[in-house]
Every structure is written in structure tokens, then in C-alpha cells.
Figure 1 (cartoon, rainbow, N blue to C red):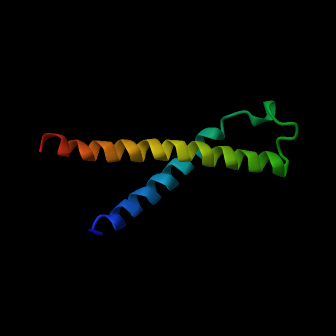
Figure 2 (tube, rainbow, N blue to C red; figure 1 turned 90 degrees about the vertical axis):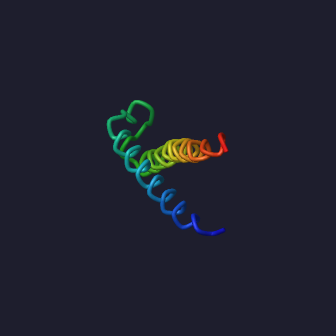
Length: 78
């Protein structure tokens, strides 16, 4: 019953960290200075971290839901 839980946990952690890194890398080219008063302030940096986490969570959830759904397709024809 608990055979795949460890593997699922590893996939979730790896996907979350991967999408966090990709999102952070991609947001480095975004011009936050157009939207915040002081782009080098701690508040602006915290905002960028929060935006990165939110986007990475959305991407990770989409990827993991897609992976789960594609794995469940095998039960369609049984």
C-alpha cells in the first residue's frame, strides 16, 4: 500500500525545487523596477521571492497533476 509514497515524495520535492529554480531564473529578466518604488529595498526582494514561490507552485502543481493524470490513463482500458 505504501510502496510508491517514497517515490512520489521524491518526485514532488524534485519538481518543486526545479520549478522554483527555473522561475527564479526567468524572473531575473523581469523589470520589477517599473512596478516598485525602491527596487533594491528589502520589501521589493521579499515581493520577488513571494512571486517566485507562487509561480513555481502553480507550475509544479500543473506538472504533477499532468503526470498523475497521464499515469492513470493506463486504467482506462482495463
